[in-house]
Image (tube, rainbow, N blue to C red):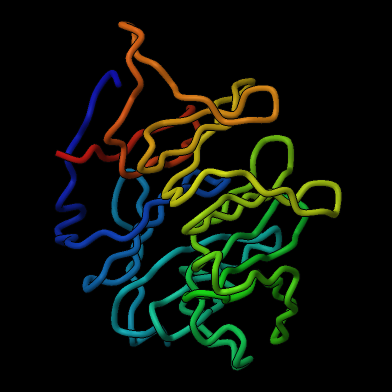
Length: 239
């Protein structure tokens, strides 16, 4: 890591209890917080959305912009919201389908599909199409709950879980034995990397192996890994 900048204030606003950070194709950085709204950052703060825009008051879990420019957001115990023209004053609309009432994460992939995961053991992975939701994968409760979503540079969609890691490739699901992944990243031309309690891992020859530092030691303690336009940014280390 060449340089780390600590941001707790931006554009005169304070950000506490940050739940996620993600970047879209236009270079906007989206920050979801537990109590200070959903923010879009450029070189300056340009927009903060909250209850006035039709969102819930707090605890935003994830955000993703689809190929039509629509912003999708998940909020803790309030489900999935969509804004068709973010930043223009257009309101957020809450999806009324009961299947998305407890959504954890949302991902709009490069082909235009929108994926989401449910919160809690046995909750499904589903796809969104307007106001409707369609279940595309469901585990038994023994597999725990599903969480973070990520599309790699090869177009594969990854779904984190408490006890394993799922990959959707060529219309089928492949299961990897990597539990509790909390972040994904991939540099251009490089392997997929994930962070989990087992440390920082990368995909090699169909399996995940530890990433090692210059001294040959496994990299551990990474608690958040976020893809950025310039490569992979490791956001936080446990202390």
